[in-house]
Length: 383
Image 1: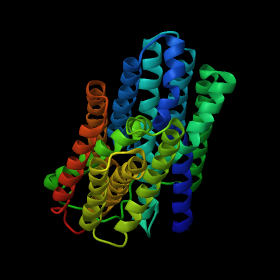
Image 2 (image 1 turned 90 degrees about the horizontal axis):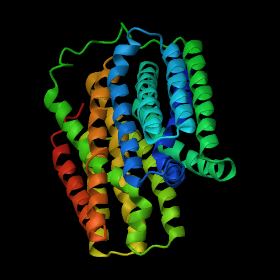
Image 3 (image 1 turned 180 degrees about the vertical axis):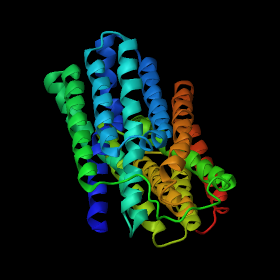
Image 4 (image 1 turned 120 degrees about the vertical axis):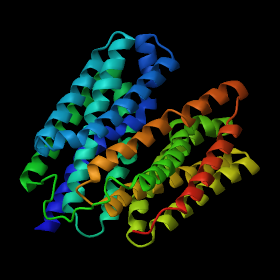
């Protein structure tokens, strides 16, 4: 019975998170929405930044929601909320309408749902919890891999409005399926039999160390994920190579998130964190020493893998350090580091490119962040 409930929780997480992974495929919407609303790249960047912020706010607020509302009802509500945001986006005629729909409403529903299914997984999965957490956080880049070509095809065939409306229908259907699965398994968000941890609120040094490592790795990784095609082209790659590199990097990040959780089931958390960041640093160093399109693709993939491993490791570490009942609360706070990371180096890299017509300085900064993260990871305890 516990094994079947764990499998149901993982299936529910898959249903909810895969369509929301299209947030990582936002670049597909850039040119169509810019043409439709007569806006520029700056306004589109603002919309994505808003979605990142509201996604994080939803994550932070999720524990206070699932303490009061049954998880299956939350899944239905998240689907309705985000679908409504996508319908607003599809019918928008001004920048403000699009910013409200996609930047505010969609992100809020996705953030709450993300933490709810993570908490459900940690309440039900008994063995290989690191692998399970790595899988859950891998669903966003995997969803982007699947969703980006589908969205691109739908935009070409039916237009961007129909594509966004269709995504809204898909989000509502999959979130409803998630709710049905959570209700069928009767998954609770709190286990009264679990051992309480008296140090739960006193581990601020540990929390700050883990959050800092997550921030540093995410800043470097999100720079790569958000601008991979542009970086490859800046180093001399053809358009076809740049597009292929973006798909490869997304796949690498998704696989690395699963691997990051899986590795914590077998090795000490500090060792996994240090190794992943040294690996990412080597990618940045290689691209700095041998700039060119043939080196750019594997080097950027190495930086992305470093971020992916830390993402999976962080989710697994929360369960190991704080326990399953506190997972959602601690995870929501930790993902603030991800939000800040998305608003720092990715934006700085674009600013530097506008002024230097290259990404050399940004890659050097990314390598420095990876090296600093490795140094901080030395201080992590072995749970």
